[in-house]
Length: 329
Image 1 (cartoon, rainbow, N blue to C red):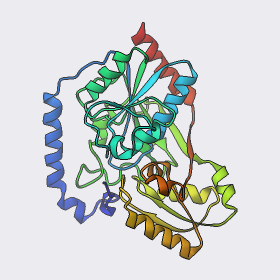
Image 2: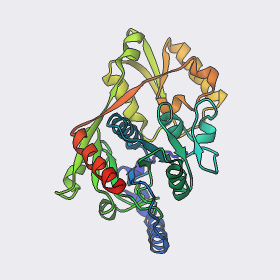
Image 3: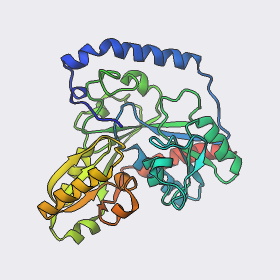
Image 4: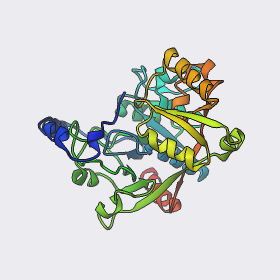
């Protein structure tokens, strides 16, 4: 699980003390990239990823691209590592057979209405997808820093509220790769939420950039009728979820943040239920958290459905479709 340290936000003494370790990270990454041999998949690979640790909204982007490409008559498959899952071999995710412990929460969430393959070995995963003969494009969720598989189009997703934090590499900061070098590996950028950190101004002028925002499903909020809500989330940026709830009109009386991918125990859930009962509040979480809950708890806890809206969406899709057509010709 990943908890975002406060010192990753701004440059200070704690981060500075960790800069030697960040140099080691940079050196190890450089050596790995120099030694890596890139493999080209049989199908076009569209990569959706980020530069930093923590949530930026890349998984909703993958879901949006899948749904819109399908609407245009294409046949995408999502390739994802399945963080937190136990699957060692490529696994087609099936809700009736698998849970978050096996497939990972993000994969399970995506697979509700989509074809999703979990594969720690991305090359083996790409081969598995192509071998079915059913698909014409691979949407790789995460993997911008994966040097072993060639990408035909890469999209960097940024959280506009936090940007790149203090701009330092792990563990001194949140970055997996330096911003300047990372930008060279992407073909387009998506800024999720208000661009409070002015990421757009730091991108190359010619780079296509798109702005997205998450919209909450009002049916859950309306169904609460103004009743108090205790919200909890174990995602990369829990505060983004809490803000979304408030903006949707929820009467949020208490909020609890857990580490990303937190495995909720019976003790955790019992305490949440006790707190909610004491406050007379309903328990609400994210879809990503909800799929990690035991079945009996899913009946007691609601999740807030959200939809990603992207400006100039058709323009981005046109670029991807052109790549699919070109490689499939």
